[in-house]
Amino acid sequence: MEDQALSSKSSHPLEQTISSIGKSLLTDVVDAIDPSPERATDILLTLQNESCKQKPTAAAASNNNGSNDTNDNTCIVTIAILENTRIGKTLTKTVKACKRHKRTASQEETPQWEKALELAASLLTIYKSAADAEAKQTAIKKKKSEAAAEEASSAESSEGLPSNTAAYKARLITQKKELYKDPPALPPSHILIEETWVKSPKRDNRTGELTFPPGQYEETNKLLKEFRPNRTPEEILRSG
Image 1 (spheres, one colour):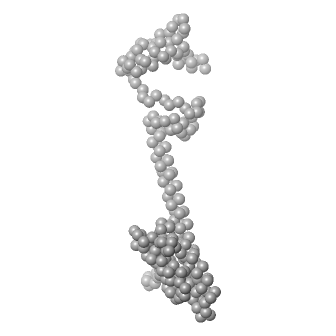
Image 2: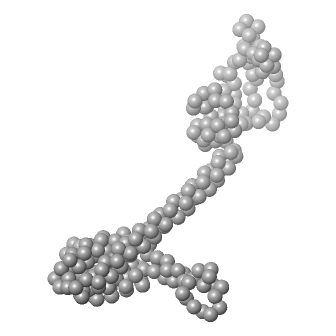
Image 3: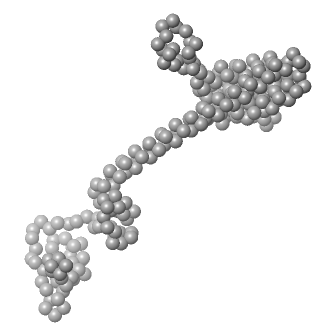
């Protein structure tokens, strides 16, 4: 039956136990023609005991008489186990089955079915709360991880030359620089520095353009042939 197709190859021992108990609920309670309320209660109590562990509270830790009365039960079933075993769906069917059996039960068995019904509903609530808490913790961890990665990326991107225009734009925005172009033009990937000084540029008296003498780097010389400004940096600054 498809409803009984729970995980049979669970890797986690608790997952195997929950899966086995779920099959017992389907067989002995949900699909049974004449189920026993005692059997239903026993299965649900076993599921409750396997799903929860005792977590000592502060009061219990300070209690020297060794009593466990102040211990708190914490659900140890994870979202992965809930998904793989589908125990939540099984419990939902169990709740409906208990209600159905309670309506047709004898006066003696009615309170027993009521107890089984309360147990099944309580387990559903416990699983939902545990899943919500785990999802919240996962979201918090993810947010912290993303923040740490973003901080590391920001620190890395602020050093050396930017790898692309997006990184360069992000750096300019972070440093509160004014964007004259969007996307901005990348700075030169590397800068070559001549080992010896070269002569100053010469101005063409007819065109006013400046020409620069070649240096020792062929790559730079090719760029200098096309670079012919008509004003020096000083002239630009003085003109405002």
